[in-house]
Every structure is written in structure tokens, then in C-alpha cells.
Image: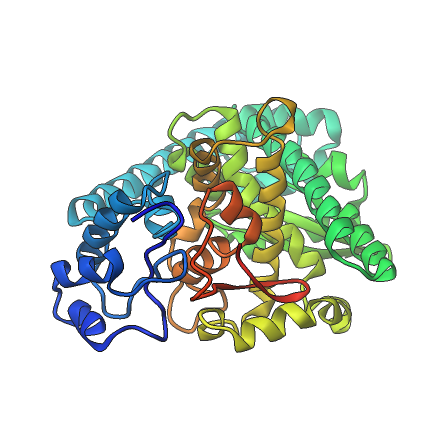
Length: 425
């Protein structure tokens, strides 16, 4: 089968025997389905009840026959981004998570002891070092002033300044990509300007940089401390990030918080541990969180008007429609994050020629590392399959960068954009 012809599994149009093949775990039958029993659109959606082993085996055979590049992204994005999870891999992942917890506990315990001694020396703590908690540390930072705050930070964790520097730089870069995307894709100039202003005002805040970013404003620092304590939990063991609203002295601003445990997650997810890789892992999450400043629920639903074509398309177009309803508050930020990642990819290569599919896949694996965690039942976020197999794969620019076309127009593949439904070419 040549480059111009593509394998397909049509979500609502599978032959009965092909659907049953997965039900009965018949990998050979699934492989036949991939290899031309049903021909048409680019990309294979994982059939319901299809076990990973059958799907991946079939996908591997299909990839060899089509010549699709880079880890079968065009056929099975979730496997290309996240890898195949065998029983052994699940055990290894649990061991990595446990090692990460042990490392986190050790780092925090040692750092708190050092910070407690420094806080006592600076007159910011009157208790014993053993009773000094993460939030005593945050409170001391808020009272310390810039110079003494930095002394506490250095005592607490030699990595803190590094991660904060990476997060601040990544936030600035992602904001510029989002702003460029808004200016290029939102047609209403008034709404466009309103969105850009909302994004420009968003800032990354942490215990390390709070005094510098928020100024010597006791009310703002107290509000930040409370937000940080509530969101990241009293132990600090929350592997998450969030855009929050902080109000002080009648000034409201969007602040982005990344919990300490998330940084360890980024470090554990990185293969090299180098700054660029960790920054890309952070950037995927930062793009999503910053876009919450302009999601459909913000500004009394004002922004939703600009997303009406996108949302209508997703409500009425398979496979988007299977999960879209009720989740647009998370899907729209995902959409913006993907658009920002397109600009990251286009900036690669000398002369702005962009990346090869192999180079692009490296970046996509970093940006979407956290999308590999499937959401729980009753979730507000869409599933990993929706985020990767549908939303990411169907983005027209991602599809083009990864070399996923052309397609057989007898079975056109729909995609949803800010202007509504379109066909992947």
C-alpha cells in the first residue's frame, strides 16, 4: 500500500467482523482490518474493547505496509506519545513513582531542616527545626523581604531556583506563542485584544519568586500563601498545576501555581534531565493552564462566543462528539496548548524550515507527557485517547508536520477548528 493510501478504522463504520475481532482478542483479524479490509481516512482509532496487545500488533503491521514515519504517530498517536504499557512496564512505573516519593520526602526533610536553621538565624522562626513545615517555610518567605527570602530559598533546596527559572522562562515563551496564535486565529479584533490582555497579565508565582513577582505587598503575599497551601495540599505532595485568581488591594490577577511534586514528576519523566527537556514538559502544562485565562467559562462566558464554531463542530462530529459535551472548559485550553506547540515546532530548524517528523515527535512526547495519564470516571478532563488520538492527531498543522497525509478523499477525515468543521488534506 503506497504513501497516498492509508489504513483506517472508522469509528462508526467498522465491519461487524472487524469489531468482533477485538471482542475476541483476535490480533490477526484486527491486522487484516488495518491492512486494507477497510480503506479510507488517515489514522486508526482504537476500537472499543480492543486490547492493547491486539491493537498494537495490528498497528505495527499496518505501519510497515504504509511507510508512515515516527513511531506510528499517524496511525496510533497514543502509543507513539506514551509507549506501550506492558505488565512489566506497569511494575517499573510503580517502582519509579515510589522512588520519586522517597526522593521527594528526603529532599523536603533535608531542605526544611536547613531552611529552619536559616529562618531561626534570620529571626523568622521561633520554634524548633523539627516542627518547621513546608507552610512555615512559605510563610517565612512572605515575611522575609527579597534578600532574606533568597537566603531561605537557597537553604531549602538547591533545585528551587533552577525550576523556578525554567518555569518563568517557559511561561514567557508560551505566553508569546499563545498571543501569536490568538492574533492569527481569532477574527474579532475586540475579543482578540481582550484575550491578549488577559494572557499578558498572567504570571507564574512560587514561594521562591513571590516577593519579587507580587511586590512587597503583605495582602497579596498572604493571599498567595493561602492559595498555594489550599491547592498544593499541606504536604506539598500534589503533582499538579493550576491557574488561579488572586485579589489584593482591589487588584485581581491570574497567577499560575506549579506544586513542588510536579517538578519532581517532570524530572522523573525526562530522559536526559536537561533544562530544555524539562522546560518542554513544563510548557505543555503551562500552555493549558495559561489558556484557562481565556477558556469558555471566563469573563461571564464572554469568550465562549469566539469558540461557538469549534464547540458546535465537536458536538456534532465523530469522534469528537463522544467526549466533548460538558468538557469544553478543558478542551478549549487543550486546543490552545496544541496551537502553541505548533508554533514551538515551527520555530525549529535553520531558516525556520521546521522540524522533521522525528524531531517533532521528540517535542510532542515532552509536551504531552502528562496527557498519558488517563482521567478517572466522572472526570472533567477528556480521556488520554481523546486528547491524543483525536484532538492532537486531527490538528491540521500537527498532521502536516508529522507527514500524515494525503488522504483517500472517498472517506474524508473531519477536523474541528476555530472556524468550524474542515477536512484534513
